[in-house]
Amino acid sequence: MDAILSWLFSSEEQELYILDCMAYFMDFMAACTFVSLLFQNVPYGRYASSNYGFPVNVKFAWFVQELPSLLLPLCLVLWTSSSKTSLLPNQLLIAMFLCHYVQRTLIYPFLIRGGKATPFASFALALVFCIYNGYMQVRYLSHYAEYPADWVTQPRFIIGSALWLVGWLMNIHSDHILRSLRKPGETGYKIPRGGMFEYVSGANFLGEVTEWAGFALAGHSAHSSAFSIFTTVVLANRAVAHHKWYLAKFEDYPKSRKALIPFLF
Image 1 (cartoon, rainbow, N blue to C red):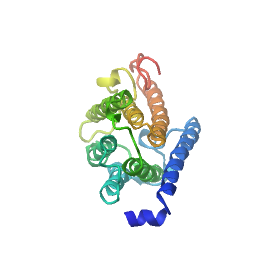
Image 2 (image 1 turned 90 degrees about the vertical axis):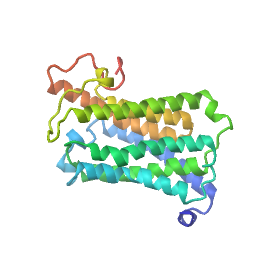
Image 3 (image 1 turned 30 degrees about the horizontal axis):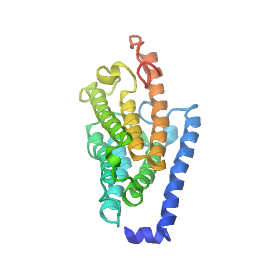
């Protein structure tokens, strides 16, 4: 891996500059995505459309598209001169990232029950994003990110880590509730109940938004912040779309529920 990176970048200064540019470009893409999602929903799941390419099996799509966010970081940590991985703040932040993608890659796809096929365009874009973000996050954390010696005891790291953990658990629990709505062989939709679904229609999305907001707070970098912003833009749109869809489909849908933020939005 070091040989590949040396071929791609003439110096560490150049690579760090590219990593910074990648973060700012992700911010720009978040703004563009926000505008585009005002006119259409992200085309996968219940909003899948043949206009976005041939269908890809949903389990296969989730596994393959998320895999780079697990494999690429592992390669960067294990097979490059990752000078910062001996430092506790960097270790913990990398562990947060990998913990999410171990679950998302090796567990979540194989628990899916039913589920509509993913259009190829959505699958391809997710794959590219995971390659892009996996490299950006973990290369920065493993080789460039510098934190004070007492960083893990500072409030922003402690609060951020707590938010990450709460969000991660909320996301996993909400996914479990959604899976449990369908018995083996069933493909229809039902009203989710329990957990944070008592307060919002997009409890699983709220979990992931909270998770990466905590990661951004604990990591305190342009790279982690860009990831959090992009995730929030995409998942907030999806939560609003789900909320409207539920209200239109189910006459008895709880009117007190919000889309993403309990009691507010």
